[in-house]
Image (cartoon, rainbow, N blue to C red; front, side, top):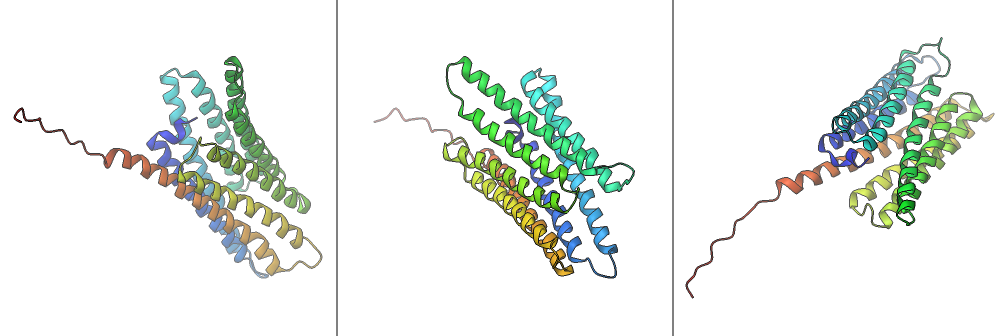
Amino acid sequence: MKKLITDKQSVLIIAVATAVLSFAYILGGLAYITVSDTSYTAAQDLSTASVWITLCAVIGYLANLGNLSFDALVKKDWRLLGELGGMTVAFFIMAIGLLVSALNVSGIAGDSTTTAVGIGLLSLVLLYKAADLSIEAQQSGQASQDAKLWLTAFLGILLFSIGYGISFSGSSSAVADGVLSFLGFALLGGAVANAYKTGKFSSVITLYVIRGIGFLAGASLLAAIAQGIEFSSSASLTGFKVAGALPAFLLALGFGILAYATWSLLESKKSLTTNYTYTPELPKSTEE
């Protein structure tokens, strides 16, 4: 799994794809703002563009994972192949779900369900990682703190996948989606914060990751509150715009911070190789 953040090409792709994902949520927020009583055309176009751009970001993640999986296959690193291969399949399923949403194929029910299944499969990969580390620790007679962190991340992604799956089922489910997503991101952020506290990821870059996930959690909680107010009897068009746009912009900010953190990781790797110059020692004189 470390291959994702140690390979320079992988880090670059993740940074670009996450930035693209941030831009997609900006368009999603603008889609809510442009809604009016007379026309939904601009909002619909922006919303469709947001889904297509999100699909492009997921394809970027998918291509990166596929490349790393193939490299693990060539090197016959079966453990790494199992982890990366599972993630590749998960993002492939997400891409199919997003493609259905982008094409707006009304004949296929539950566009979000397919994407949610992919996210759920991704959580199972994290569970596999936690179980693998736990078994390895038990064989050595030690407790595995890493396994607990991966298990926490698994629970976080699993809650997010459940929320995403029910997000388009109705008004009450939209509120439930926000709450479940908030809990999921909170668990994920807690796992990263614990890793930073224990020194496993002590870089300043980790702090940006924590902040980015914090904004994602905050956006999800705000979405739950806003949706609860919006679906009340006193709902208005302005309330609808705020309820949709503000969480979307916060999500864009969160993913933007994560993109910046990933780019900073790439720059730190470059500095390790480009800023080092070798100066040979001069031969010592034999004269006193």
